[in-house]
Length: 413
Ligand SMILES: Cc1cc2nc3c(=O)[nH]c(=O)nc-3n(C[C@H](O)[C@H](O)[C@H](O)COP(=O)(O)O)c2cc1C
Image 1 (cartoon, rainbow, N blue to C red):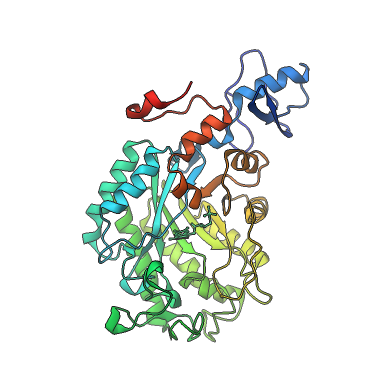
Image 2 (image 1 turned 135 degrees about the vertical axis):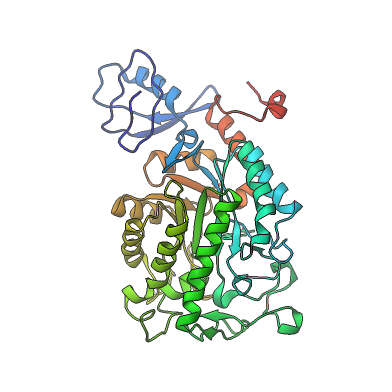
């Protein structure tokens, strides 16, 4: 079986030899059905035959991806989504049904919501947590159910920093006082997110060491719970991102100032996590590639950081943006963050995921086919439609998708 340079194994139509040189994305509608593919050049047969051939190999969205020892059955990732439905960090029925139904829906990889590595690292008192061993059994039950559906599952490890101690969003936008169950918040520097948030306490060096140890212990618990993917949350203005950006990091010590100092915390977290996270298991990092603010964290620094992360055992950069300051002007629109994944991918050779306003199968497919990303992260579309992968396969004409046996009678030929 031929293997493309990017590692995708193609099924071949018997009498064709596939080229591995180049391609051009095409799409068209014929008899009310969508066709798409890559035009193979350098081959003798007439173009229409090649199109026919390509019709059979397409649906990159459903090509497996091997990362270290873990194989994702397709490129669809359920992006982390806070549910604010945990008690004292414990996963409950909601989490099992929420994550489990996305596995029934056929996603290749499902990431948990931001899962706090310490109680003070929660965004709200209802956040999911993994700061004590008692959290492991309920998480393990979810992992086992998801994997039984043929999906893979990862945990997003997080610390909210100065954006901690708030209620669930449907209970208002404010900071919780201690009387309301809130807690003292920490950050690189005593700079609040905005006037309705509290002023954080700047972390001491001992406090930073504790944060690193908390991520490490959380990764160890994740392994005990059976997760095979860890994603470190370094985006959206939470603690790690607060260290990366000069807008929130005003430190004068070895964790502030220069690029090397601002990225130090994340690199030390990655190194600590890698010592306990099995070598065969993938490690993802979610980054805000830009703050969308002049003088803030930006793409050039992010590409440099990605190279450093790669050399420390990170496999995938999940490319998001924003969230550090409330006044950023973000040009939100369909696929608006795709270029970040493309640029980091081409500059570093790392696998990348893209996220943000991706809502259709054809949109996702064209991002993959044009080599801009390796994984498609979907958040709100997976809330609208937990069965998005099954529907996307139908839209792309990809018949080989397996529906759960219990639902097979509903699969249209
Ligand atoms: C309800 C909800 C909760 C979210 N919680 C998280 C989270 O826990 N961690 C995270 O990195 N991003 C979180 N996000 C951001 C999403 O993962 C995603 O990056 C963003 O929604 C853009 O993707 P979309 O356009 O497909 O929704 C959340 C988004 C939503 C809608």
